[in-house]
Image 1 (cartoon, rainbow, N blue to C red):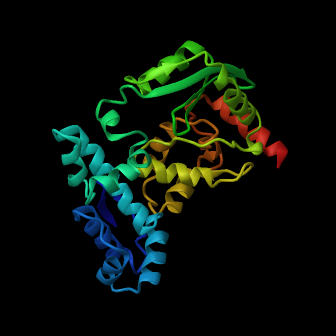
Image 2 (tube, rainbow, N blue to C red):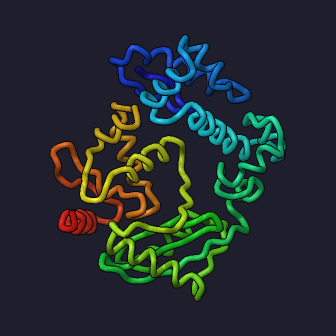
Length: 289
């Protein structure tokens, strides 16, 4: 069933679900609301009990109603910050009923405060370091919130250019001795993903990308899934190409394990940091399983 979700038309729900039409209707209701409706209002509109509605919504959409509504509001906020003359106007247009409530959540919503986002990340400080791992050159970068980039490649200079392209207005700070310990943890994790990464992540992307990336993070080491598997897991069975696009846009190599996504026939497909690195990661995880 095609439905407009946060400005994007796509086949979002399993067409054989008896609740597909009503959940699509509720999504449109959330999209068009000036303030996020409460669970009881949404459940009533769907003709279901709140508990049953919550379970059905999460199964079909891949998010809870609250998470979906937060994603809609974040999209509206990003758009309003680029079109409205003041941050206050943008806050209310996005559905926040008070500026105080918004500022409590602004960094979680945008990854930085609203004025900084409006200025394209100007004055945001990103610490970074470049080193070597078993897969070649690696660049790691962190904002005040957490690790925001892990990039792999052959040319350290190109990795730095990629970081500059991602944060064109931020202050990039390299050579920080205090960041070396963070870098060591990241390199150790890239070389041995099964140890996990005990560092907070600053994941920035569209609502759809974040859904895909969360599904990728749920794949255990040593296991692979197809693009179709991921599309079905997030409740968008016909969005295989969009899933592939989200994998290609992943800024956090290994931490968001897009290397664990393969073609339907099990063969390796493309990988942002090279198919050879993808094969090496999968081989290493397979040996450890």
